[in-house]
Image: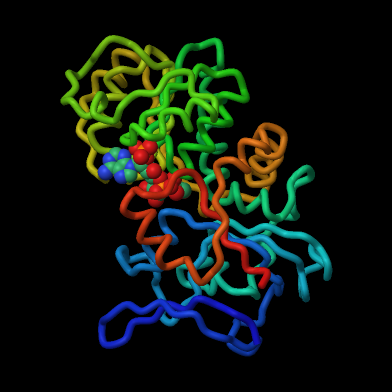
Length: 327
Ligand SMILES: NC(=O)c1ccc[n+]([C@@H]2O[C@H](COP(=O)([O-])OP(=O)(O)OC[C@H]3O[C@@H](n4cnc5c(N)ncnc54)[C@H](OP(=O)(O)O)[C@@H]3O)[C@@H](O)[C@H]2O)c1
């Protein structure tokens, strides 16, 4: 028997409860992993609380990420004892995910633990780290380099935002961190933000083109902040968008695209090909300052997950939440 968080729909009402499962409750195909750690992403918080239509099959163990040790494998790519990491795919959506001490997953969803990271550090990064690094790769591939000028990050005290600020700073970028939380200004400067921009400054309606402030942007929130960033990004700039913490709406014109040659790039972390995932993890292991990763991570037990999910959705979590499943 092993511990798990199970979400169900009972008479149309969402429930999330800690249960004991047995091996036969899992799918039994691919690779069986003893899960040591998972993480709490925005999407996980929606799945745990039932606030968003994330889970497609009930009952289900949520948790889009996990790290742990292979117990059994039908794949020649993994042997018993291998340390592995899984982010995204169908885990925690339509397939039992990381909020259980055991998980069966298709071998293709896994990567071996990147050299230089522990299982704990890999999950402190998790989908948030993968998303932040995918965004940075788009900036680099679009020739937005540290010498190009400031890069702005929105939702900066969240999981993706905090890691993006720390990574960009470690790579030598001038980072402008946008936050709605006055009390997090010092935190963001410690992560490496060169300047901190209050969220209200990004909320005012933008003209189609404003003065050119940013060489690039990593946007986690959408809505009016993204509209303003598009109007304020310099010629040849790259703006990535991964999230909609503020709004799924975007109001813009064609002006930034046809007069400044701007590129708006959508980031999708869930179904990246294996080669890209391996590259992303290698760059994360090489770039992320591990002392900063520790300082932006709070560790919780599975028992606190529901409460912490509500807190995250109400904007009360700073940085990353690591879920320790070892006991
Ligand atoms: N595309 C993908 O593959 C992918 C992967 C990961 C995440 N995401 C998405 O990216 C977003 C961020 O994810 P996360 O895990 O970093 O979430 P998170 O930890 O909850 O961070 C979101 C941050 O956004 C800011 N925020 C919250 N509500 C806001 C509002 N109403 N207006 C403006 N800013 C607001 C807050 O930062 P401040 O307090 O500092 O302002 C908050 O900390 C989510 O929408 C998530 O679904 C997408």
